[in-house]
Length: 118
Image 1 (cartoon, rainbow, N blue to C red):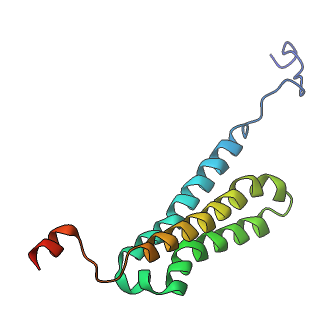
Image 2: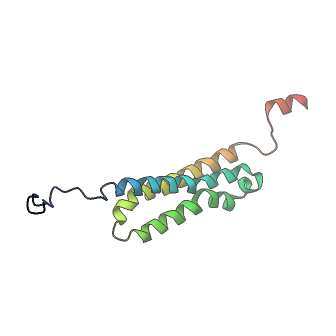
């Protein structure tokens, strides 16, 4: 039976790890999603009113994830930066927009319904 087998053409043979990049990509997206959940800490007034705590919730975890991934993928820094550098830039952009929206509202102004009762 071994004698009757055709020789294996290694150039057309599919590797068992052909989908590894899809798995790595999905893992990185899940990692970025979990890393950005710290933004919800800004619902707490103490964190929202402190500039540095708010900055940490937006940027600290995504920055740590970006640095760890860029160090872990030494050979693939260009490919890894395709996902993580724009993610970090968008985190910074959303932080700046969030801080502008926090300062637009005057402290203690309340809602219209609260002002009608006064």
